[in-house]
Length: 362
Image (cartoon, rainbow, N blue to C red; front, top):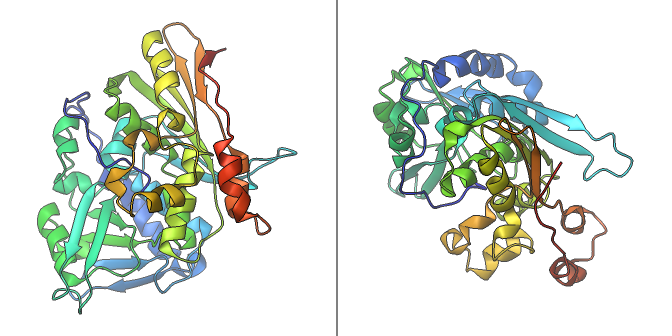
């Protein structure tokens, strides 16, 4: 998840003239993922309909490398994603996930954003309810979200890939809906499943650090056409024992450990985003995400949407050549949550004592 449940009302960007096909660009990445299944510790099967199902963490063990490849697929082939071993003497965290894209709006909002709600009843799923948010390039074939009307983008390709962050493989009813909405032949659709608590799932969620920044800019009403380059980095947390704990860890990785660097066209926008984009602008900032989620009765929609943002933003202006920054990384909070010898009783008091600093420039 890691993204806000709210969408702005006013359109702020148009991709209607784009000739890029996120599904065409992702197609060779999907083929490579499947070809490397054994090495990446993922399972590949066929649904009754003939659709390819990639299990990257439900029954399969998965891997960091699988998560990286899935994150690249999520970005429609328009993003660079890679793990990086921290070389600092006192790193924020030993392993980081870094992301870059030169087409940030299309890669992040037109493809990577998890915005397609897909559900099945108990009757359709062997007695169990099914719900997942779909992300990845197939979203742009179906265009079932209001976001695509705002972006003015629709992909047209004869194959598609969809990623589901869920702990079970999709039932045929959901597969049929995706096929129908995307207007695809069954054998031309690939669905990749990455539970949040899996290794690959953890990677692909943390790799949303730039997407979270783009979505926050969208919520703020920023002119997205003026954001021309985007990079980001966030710590890769250890896998969690269950989905709820994993959701907390992956959100914390971005909210308290994520840093983005955006390049925008004008100085006023750079100053504004440096000030307004970081997560500390939220009234709910300062506590581990799992605690925040629990305090609202596990109702995601009660959380302040301003929280869903990277911890730190560096915004460069093409107009002035200046770079402005705002926010602050909170490695101490992350270590208190993730270290094996952390004292959970001290977490709340120490976190509440966290200070802040304002936006500046260099």
